[in-house]
Amino acid sequence: MEHLSEEPRLPAPRGPLSAAVEDYLRGTGPLPAPGQAAAAPVYGDDLQLALYLCYELHYRGFAGVAPDLEWDPELLRTRVALEDRFLAALRADAPRHDGVDDALAGILVEPVDGTGVSHFLRDEGELWHVREYAAQRSLYHLKEADPHAWVLPRLRGRAKAAMAAVEFDEYGGGRPDRVHARLFADLMADLGLDPAYGRYLDAACAELLVTVNLMSLFGLRRSLRGALVGHFATVEITSSPGSRRLAEAMRRTGAGPAAEHFYDEHVEADAVHEQVVRHDVIGGLLQDEPHLAPDVAFGVDATVFVEDRLGDRLLADWRAGRSSLRTPLDQELAHVS
Amino acid sequence: MPNSPSDTPRRVTVRRKGPLLVEGPVEVELEDGTVVSSDRFRVALCTCRRSRRYPWCDTSHRDRARESGES
Image (tube, rainbow over all chains, first blue to last red; front, side, top):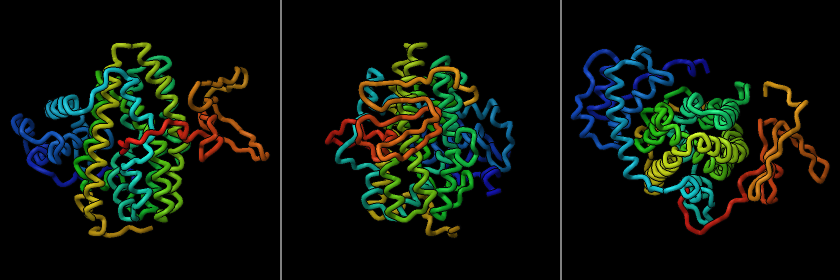
């Protein structure tokens, strides 16, 4: 897996905004004009890819892009303009709960007759659905826990210690073969997917980019530390039961042992993480900074909102017998291991 | 975890609803004599007996409702 350490290639642009950002990253053109950023649909492919490109410089960057563009003032100005639109849209469109407990109450109840993506995959998912799901989610899982690590210096005491402990677990407890991103790469290999970082950026739909951009936004802005913590709690709370269904889907479709293991591990790990994040990370943060409660609730609500949009998109495509990817996997060269 | 915890009492956190939280690593001896272990920094032990991964919590203690809304 030597290619895991290589920087990914820049993806194909999805409109004038992302094309201009890519030209700038390559040093071949100017950044998009302010009017362009204001005109693009906020959850659309073009704006979300442009934002994704800006964020990715803070993770692993791209081949052929100067690493120091991460701190280029003009590029940061563009990013913030896109980000402000994204943030304003989330604040306007996500459901709104007054308190953290109210926001969390909805996701702490398990639906008897759930109709989400994990229910679909468990009950009727075929191998091609499972492979598409993994390709889409690889944009996050191959950097699993990374956007959340940025919050550590912004927490104190109990919240910091608890957050660091959960991150330690996400990063394999000191064992490289147990790093969750590595476990996901193993799952991808089981599914005949290419586990190279960023490999499926071109294929991922806009709704998926939105979910990863949300984490990067909350992770990178200190002012949104409350939202990051609320987001993280939502991921951990919903992960355990969802992972159980996905593990069943992996078993039923014969995805392979590493694919099953990834979700089995998350059933158990996230049942613990949920408790620690709710009681010690959120509890500790709100003890230190009680004024952040509305931000924590916003982080929960915004995460539920973007995940629901992604779920609706995937299920709409799959129920219509369509691929959810921009580049269907069967049109690619298979890399079956 | 970095420091040896052997000279300090092991913390167990009890909640009215939900698992028992124990500082890891732990070994659990089940009724049939089987011993299972977990080396997580903290371990969530099922108290509702509904877990399908008993003795580990798998969030099966949660209330269930008829309306859906999961992703």
